[in-house]
Image 1 (spheres, helix red, strand yellow):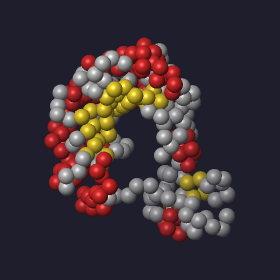
Image 2 (spheres, helix red, strand yellow):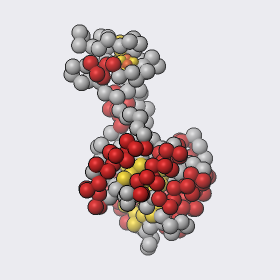
Image 3 (cartoon, helix red, strand yellow):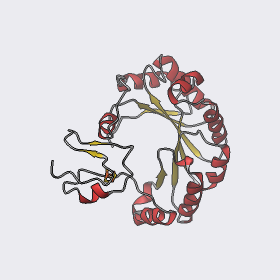
Image 4 (cartoon, helix red, strand yellow):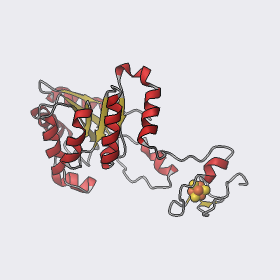
Length: 245
Ligand code: SF4
């Protein structure tokens, strides 16, 4: 293919279909992106300063009457100093601020930003500690302790739990009801169940990575039936429909 851009680090292997990029060699210099005539190459993400982010956010402020800014990731709270300064700056402009987090951070990180944020989307991947360790590599003790702490603070919390049958849930009916009870017991008013889907499979291929999670997605109607059966009062528990982003 004569349209393949010349890579200064020889990271692009010619002749492969799809094209193979050796990511150990690639230093994200962007040369291929800039010269590829068919725009087949793209670098996702870029470094930005606080001022740049704020400027970009404010450009659309007129459309924020029903929302605001959501700090997402990866894990935004793994960049606590940046987030700390950013939320202060965004709040100065009167914006509604939400943060998506896995909760596996020091309590101090939350204390530092709580006065400036309005909503936390909090990942709780499994109630069972051993299963949590098996599938995420860390204990859920810190995550649950932070969740209990946040439940008592003046901030809205929505707990989000992925449902991956055979991984974080084995007996769906029993364990979903247990989760609903647990979240309701903390006084948290909203739980969202996120059924496993395979939309990420193609992205893995584009990154030259093997997609190894071969699980059948759960039946959404069945999950909704379970939630209807076990929903206690004082909590809105919802099964979200996966959306391709
Ligand atoms: S960004 Fe493109 S040109 Fe630069 S090292 Fe990576 S593959 Fe090569």
